[in-house]
Length: 257
Image (tube, rainbow, N blue to C red; front, side, top):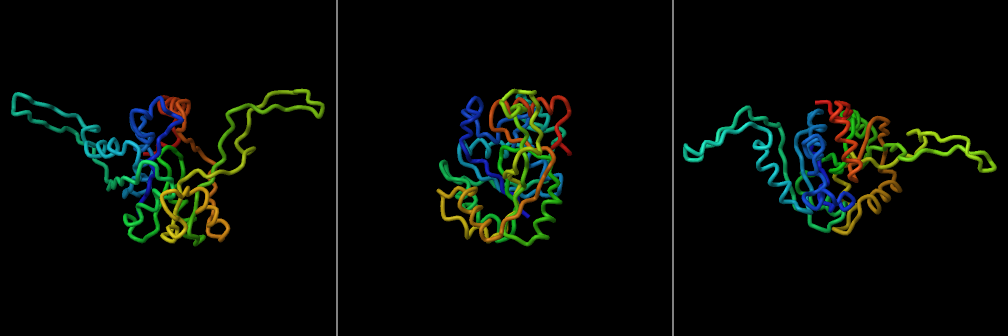
């Protein structure tokens, strides 16, 4: 089963980094967040990836074309006809297809453009800027058991701000941390999609999270796999620093490999 990763947006909310590279190529723990996502899928035995590229798509292509250079020790011997020797080459059991899905294509349009690369079979799909300690095997089993066109992983993001506990008169009694269970469930990505999903996508301007998912829900063809573990998107510089900090403390829940 192929895994499709959306990696074509501008990443304007983290412009401190995204003016140099696509957001999925921004590094946390010295590796692109895209690499972390792929390692998570690979841990569960899913190694066939289709990357929906767009903005600065050449950066993603160049990264994978020189992957062994990024991961190995190398000797450059200029005295011997510019000979290059690769030591302790770290290889992944990955097959990676990078598709230029357009610069301004919306999420639904990007998915539609890779239709021919998933061979008419069910596939997994997620966003290229979020890490999670999800049991991907459990997600896939849940999807098969329910027999619907689409399954998404639902998460409850923790609140960034404290909650005020007040009296009826408005007197503040205390500040309290917002508990994760106080929030509603939202789309956390990490989806499983049947090929019928392409019938719900009209073209490049289709935002997948609006028309297609809404129509799937109204047709009774969308189910939620509720994940109460760790999930974090890398949407801003603050998010990047937070994820970097977890890796630096060896406390990154998504790193299981």
